[in-house]
Image (cartoon, rainbow, N blue to C red; front, side):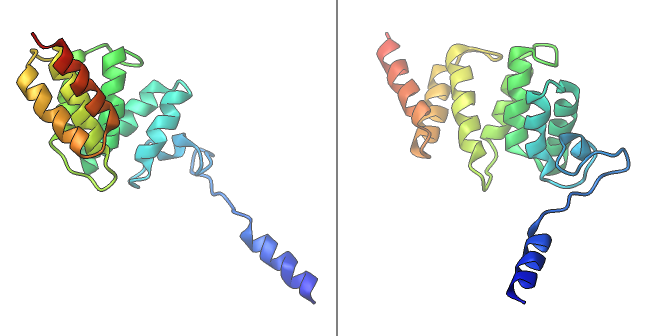
Length: 161
């Protein structure tokens, strides 16, 4: 009898994955492009990394619109900054980082947005250069534990005239 119970336990422990109306597995990013589930925001990364940039952009834009999702703001900003899958637009990339920097989130992505926004301000990338504001954002990110922000602040201070 114990073997039967073990087999039943194994049978029910094996995950069964559903498919959507297009036959996509619920583990595929494609199943989440039009989803109303917030987990879709994480699938934008998978879409981008597999080269389906249009799906990634659609996912990230929807996540920003629905949930003001900072993770999606950061990834979409990186796409605009590099011009991968979208027209290169540093101003749009910086605007997304700025929006993320002004947001608080439970997952701590806002602190990364603050770091990236501070760097954009320091370098004048997609926005006029503003060293005092850059220092403010970088200090905040550093205080929140973003090591790269602290390191960038040190380099910024050494480069100051």
